[in-house]
Image 1 (cartoon, rainbow, N blue to C red):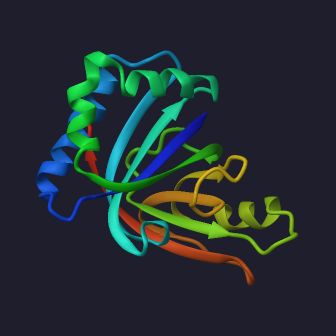
Image 2 (image 1 turned 180 degrees about the vertical axis):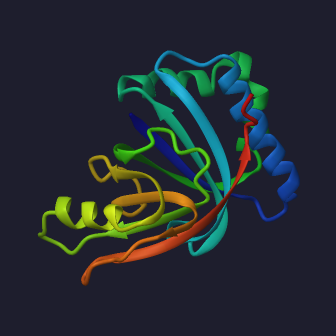
Amino acid sequence: MLAYVFWHLPLASVDPGDYEAALVGFHSDLGAEPPPGFETSATYRVSEVAWLNGRRGYEDWCFVTSSAALDTLNLAAVKPERWEVHAAVSRRTDFGHGGLYYHLHGEAKPIAGSRVIWLRRPRGIRYEKSLQAMIDGATGFLSCWRKLMVLGPGDEFAIIGDDTLDITVPAGWQSRVVERTLLGPKRG
């Protein structure tokens, strides 16, 4: 399982409620007619993120079965029949950054996760044992992801959990906690 993660900010002149409604509309439309390899998606309001210049913003997670599914996702997101629902978001967006992550541990689609701990390891060390120890000792853990091929501005690892998520971070590792609120789309 891969996740295309997109962090973004609306233009300063845009009403947050309008932006959020457009985001949920886009994700709902995409899920109503999913392209091959697309599993599901979710959009969140997030606390300050370094790669959004330290500002609060939004984070979208699109779960796909493989890197080949990224082609169909990209085409489906901007196809002519979806133009208006995509443009309702894109014309209100100031800037954004995308990243690609692959699933390591836990739930494959952690939609309900309301807290993410982003991690960077010290240079030159293997991560497997340290990461496993963090996960084994965590409270509120749901899922763990690793950045694919250094694609995107986010940190190397994302540990997703509920609002009680807490881990013990080893010396030398860097961490940042991001709180997030699920906006949608609504699940049946």
